[in-house]
Length: 176
Image 1 (spheres, rainbow, N blue to C red):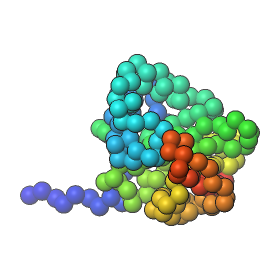
Image 2 (tube, rainbow, N blue to C red):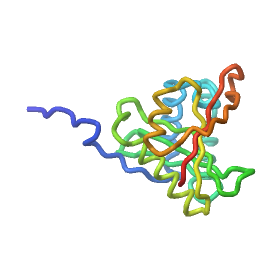
Image 3 (cartoon, one colour):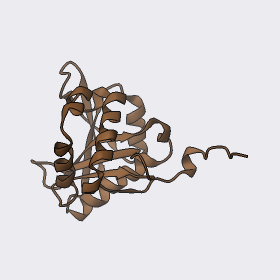
């Protein structure tokens, strides 16, 4: 007799900072992210797939420690199922820019987004940056609603999308 799969909120995927040993699993998650939400990220699947493993390994080693930039993953064992990064804003010393937020579709609605943002927020606060900012494509109402539930507010600032200039992104902020 097999048991029914657990509902999403019954599963756990601990959130932690990436480690150098995560490079191959992070590459797989990155390719999934780009295929699932191509407008949300700054490179294409083809560009990411063409990048050698050594490039992924170097990037993961760079973001695995320190206060300048960090990446957090949701790791239930096996494939990684979520990601969020943070980087110090160059012109605002107290601000961390949240980037590359992603939750695997089958884990959406499980609370994992909040755990990933909390990981970035705790790191940001420990590094002396009490505020978070992220950008969302205008019209991505599902993401905006999710970020509002996590305490982000729309600042009213609109900026061009970095790869599709005809599109706009809205900025949202909250405390870390």
